[in-house]
Length: 187
Image (cartoon, rainbow, N blue to C red; front, side, top):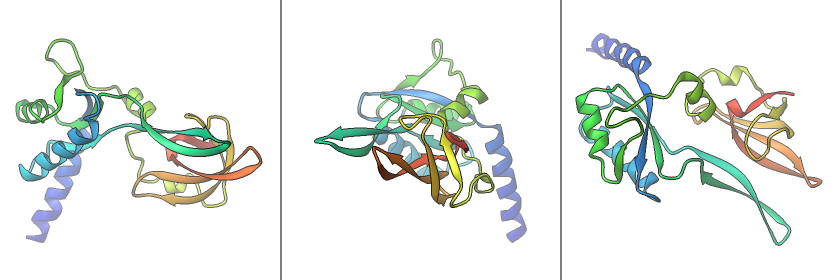
C-alpha cells in the first residue's frame, strides 16, 4: 500500500509538471471568493490531479498617511485569477462553472496558457530551493515592485510561502518588508 502511495505521489508530481497557468476573468471584487470556491471544488471533487494551484497575484505598496508609512497589499490584476491546471473537458468545466467566473482569457472560448516568461514575471511559480540563494544577513537588492532598487538585509526566510523578509532603510528608519524571493538579487 505504501509503495502505491509513493508511486501515486510521483505520478501527481509528473502531472503537475504537465500543467500550465491560465488566466480567468472574474466579477470585480470576487477574486478571493473565486479562489476559495475553486479550491473547495477541487478538494470536494478530488480534482487535485488536474487543478494544482489557484492564485490572486498581490503586490505590496507603501501608503503614507499623516507622515507614517504603512505597507499594504493590493491585487496586481483586479478581476483576474491565475489557475495552474491540466486543460481537459472536466477541468475546463469546473473552472468555467465556478461561481464568480466569467470566463477564461483567450480568443473565443479557447483558453491560452501563459508562457514560462509570463509566469516568471508574475512570480506565481515557487522555486523550492530558493533558500540556497539567500541566507539571513545577506545584502539583497529589490528588482521589482514599490521597493525597486532599494538595498536591504535578509531578516527571515519562509520556504513554504516563497517569501523573504528584508530590512530596508527608508526615510532614515529600518522597515521590515516581506517580498517574493524572485523579486530579489544579491547586492
